[in-house]
Image (cartoon, rainbow, N blue to C red; front, side, top):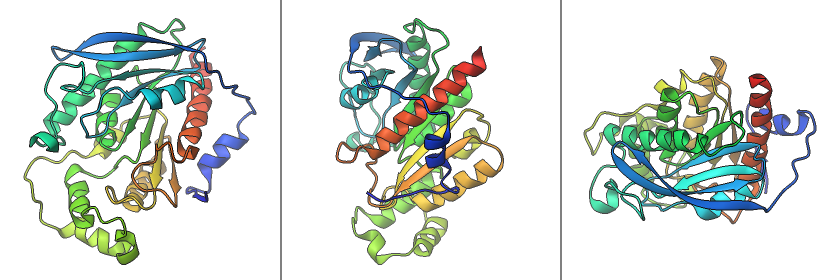
Length: 297
């Protein structure tokens, strides 16, 4: 697959020019189920713990009613990254109420996004108690809707030390909805529309829903932890090039953010059908974890 890199190939150079550290793959890890409390309800999940993990990650869901992401978690654990993954509130063994389109509610309302960020933060607090080496860097890895949740959680919880975001927006919730309604699930959208068409629509289209927009840039602007975004150029859920443009603005202000764009992929950049985005994210996490641990000494 041909992969397009931005920012003067910064991410690729990061991976190949840092001191050459060989990260051996280990398939040995233990799985332990657990429950933890967040905002008065009990969430259920699993910890996948390799021997001597180099980093730890809590998985943050997309918008769907998703149980714990065991297959994705195993991919990380096999490479030495400890993982906590949990059933989304109101789903599987987790208590609470799932808010989302499938049950007729708005799951990107500011109140719900903040609630889900509290869940992710509570997971981090719990996970830290399971890590033998207290210097093990811990971060958040998420998908899609997590682009609004992760920055909120990271801005409130200093234990979060890095973030990886697959197909996650850097635009507001209302802007994302305008784009999603415009593409309307049309997989050939980008064959018939230009970038300027999409931006004009996002800027001027009347909103179908009236609620206070969440802007992730408010939280992102305050964050000094490293972040990695992975985008698919054919995405019809978020306007990728606009998101990248806004990331570049943050990077110019000194925020330690990286991103990469995959020319043949759409919204599902973490798919098993193409391992390259996840493989890149794993190497990025390991490199950042080494830097973070050195800083703690």
